Image (cartoon, protein in one colour):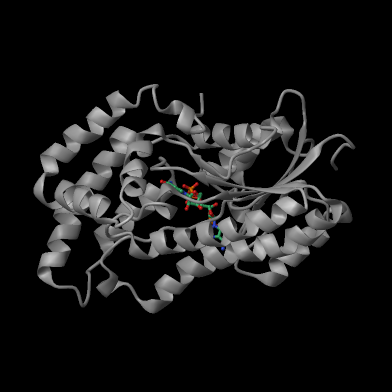
Length: 317
Ligand SMILES: NC(=O)c1ccc[n+]([C@@H]2O[C@H](COP(=O)([O-])OP(=O)(O)OC[C@H]3O[C@@H](n4cnc5c(N)ncnc54)[C@H](OP(=O)(O)O)[C@@H]3O)[C@@H](O)[C@H]2O)c1
């Protein structure tokens, strides 16, 4: 149970990746400032978390079942907490989806929205009324840089993240009146199960209903550069956990929090030209005309942003 001075932090999707690392980092806080409710939809997947948490489990870390796609599951979890009190909600659970739209069923697309968008809305709807009543609380949403700038062949995933950004941008203004803060975390590529699942799924897919050229562009042009980008620009789940902790501990957290300074120039392109042509043309040429140049560009970006743009992001260091 949480001590009287500890903040109660509920995190979704803690069986792996960013959620797991964030739960462990907060539970192991040296000053024991947090009581972490680490949740996952299937407790059979708890071993990695418990191993990483060590003796924090049962002290500053508790485990609960929570499926963000189920009202009943969310209600049961929150009702099991003392006074249903949550100081910080970290909405992290999410799923990815890449590939040509033609071969993705409507069911698969709806599942992405059910989890990423409606899952987040469900969590906020359950937690927000108590925070508003208490005139205090912090809602942290793990979005993505793809919620600000979409990436080719990530159409549905990017749309779900854009939806999250739009919902939260609207809600944040109202919540401020109730002294409730809403912060978005916008990671670029992160080495987690996400990336592994993407490569596995794609290698098994047959792309029904998709023409030969599109399959070629996806498999032989997009995928190699995507893997390249993960390799050159990828962060670790621990990096993102450190960013989340920093945002939590700021007196006045920002609304947008990019975790990777390498993405600042890409967003600058978008905001420099309100017709959208500049970023559309840049992405088009980088992908289809200048594959090799793209590699050089990623390395150059890495060099260029080694420190000078960090102040624009919530750097993990
Ligand atoms: N990895 C990246 O490159 C990247 C980049 C930007 C943003 N993000 C975002 O970061 C967040 C965490 O992803 P990750 O990279 O840490 O990937 P991950 O290792 O695959 O973790 C995703 C977590 O979400 C959980 N989850 C999925 N559906 C759920 C549901 N219905 N209810 C509750 N939990 C559910 C998964 O649980 P199961 O084990 O049960 O499947 C897992 O614990 C996601 O929102 C993702 O969009 C990731």
